Amino acid sequence: MPNLDFGKYAAYIVPAYLISAAVIGALVADTLLRARRWRREVLRLEALRDSKKAG
Amino acid sequence: MITVLANPQRFLAFSRVAAPTLGAIAVLLAVAGLWTGFSVPDDYQQGATVRLMFIHVPADFTGMLAYACLAGSAFFGLVFRHSLADAAAKAVAPLGAGFTFLGLVTGAFWGRPMWGAWWVWDARLTSFLILFLLYVGYMALQAAIDDETKAARASGILALVGAVNLPIIHYSVVWWNSLHQGETIFAAGGSKAAPVYLWPLGLMAFAYLFCFGALWMARIRGEIWRRRAGALAVQGAR
Image 1 (tube, rainbow over the protein chains, first blue to last red):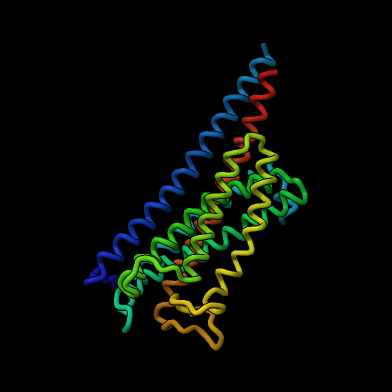
Image 2 (cartoon, chains in turn cyan, red; image 1 turned 90 degrees about the horizontal axis):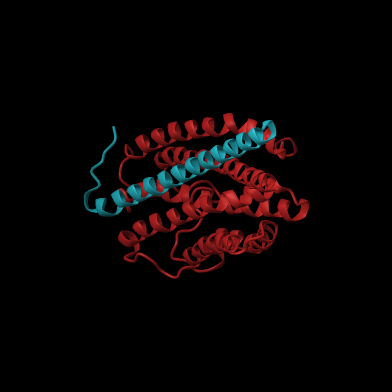
């Protein structure tokens, strides 16, 4: 079973894990948001191009 | 495989399935790694701080692997002038910087209770800090040059020159008298770490590796779309 009692070292272990989770979480969020943003932009521009062709 | 995926359309189709699959595997491995990592007994010398090894070593390893990917992509971009290689290089730099930053920070959190110092100008630590600065320099150079082709060429040369730092990091504990511990996991004659710690370390190392793979693919997808959006915007302006 996991033991989360780190004794006198808790002040080093807990922040290290929290910072790791925060940085990896930020990388995941930035990656997904960036990809989604540019995909939407491509779809918008393609729709604009198609409407210009049709019009 | 590389030549097949060098086509952006094929890469988009492949990564649409591969990226979330790798991400899901990374989450499962991380859960297993954290569970086993928090279940192992304290080390007889390091006490509970041995648990920092389970996030420090994978972050270091991934930071270095990401730089090898950056240098490899930059090489293909410079030699073959392939746009997907440039996109791959640009996409991997922030990830490598993030994991290298984590290696430095988690190392400092281990160093303070074990060495009595957050930071020492040791060969391993200093060469690893240089790795982080190389990532920052690469991204700064990319951002500073408006022409994407020129930016890819200049930053690609920087990435290739910086690759000389990878063997320096690896052998720093051999070449110089270092405060940082020497080769432990893949030491000649077998691992010097207690076997009970190898399972969580291995699980977390693969979790970081799969996480990096998933994020790199997703960032390359974003970069492909960004370039396509740029091309469509130019097309629309005519």
